[in-house]
Length: 110
Image (cartoon, rainbow, N blue to C red):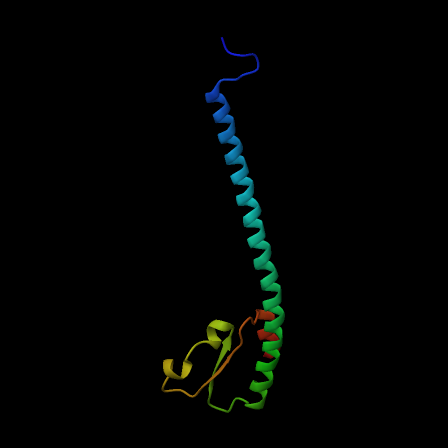
């Protein structure tokens, strides 16, 4: 006969497995949240740095104004990173793309 208070070992292991899965799930959620929060913090810092970069880029662009007959490329980092002179060799192209630029920023520049 089993001693009083002793449970079935199979059921005991099953409960332990549930606890382990619950603990792993909680750790996964906590780890995901920590990674998400870190990403948001990095994004805030990056946006602050980007604002300063946009200001410097605009100053440089003002120093080299667009001339008549040039094709002007406006946009965000996708435009800024483009090699428009190579893409449009038959045109005089001025790249005015600025990383992290928004529609509001672009409208302000226009």
